[in-house]
Image 1 (tube, rainbow, N blue to C red):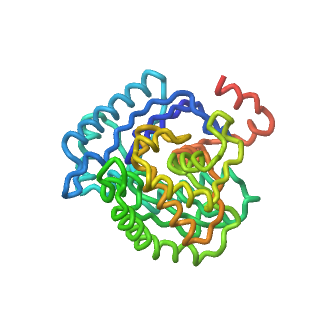
Image 2: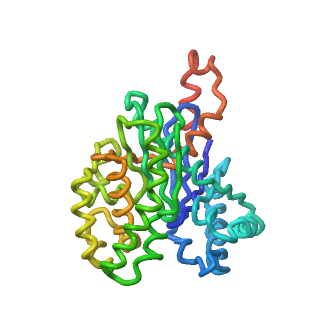
Image 3: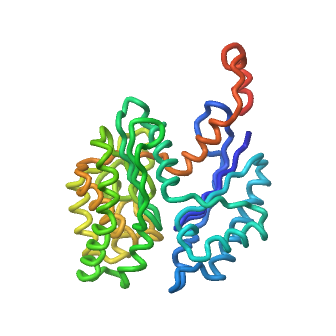
Length: 326
């Protein structure tokens, strides 16, 4: 079956098409995305403007058509913090559905943390023991911890990198006073969330998911994307502290020249670094292992789990399953 997954995030709207069958890996067949950056369309009251609503609707319609042209049989569409925290998020979703026919499901912060955790568990496996996952998005920051396939605790706080940059940093380079207020704000909001996570116990492995963590790890010396998804990519708190301080003195244009940082995300990398550094410090985490799977893969894996598997086919006629993707 060809499956389409449309992810409406705070930074990017991304459609993935995959050929899937029971037990298959979520390997993309095709991709179609845009850096819409919904957070830039928020007004002073926290509502998404008509311009932002229409831009989202236009791309969702475009993604729907792309999926149809490529013979997608099913389309899963969901939206995260940019929609759920907007004052008019429900109205925007209704507008998108009425114009495009696509029903965008709003995922809560706790759900986002839990589904991402399930993808991380699949990636590292049971031998990883108790996993703690940290995920920095454009609008929110999620943490989840547990010993099983689903987390024992999952929390979401409004500490996304794009949100914080928009609120605290107003120039090409951050002023010391802006950085100080940003750090104080992050610590204040993280404190109760860290208490919830820490109450579960000490993790055996701490994972970092999302583009922000991948970029931060690359800045700190992790292997580039071209070396493939299976190369270990650890990021150490000692290195992150050093680079976060360096980024405080850089302009956004200078940050864009760092390894693993795109021009579109350069402005928000300082905020991402401060959130990651603060969370790791407060949780007592010295090293984060970067995981290539996150929310999108978690949604895909849950959909795959619901595909029917005939035991007779698996045991006696496995070539029939292989043939489904030929």
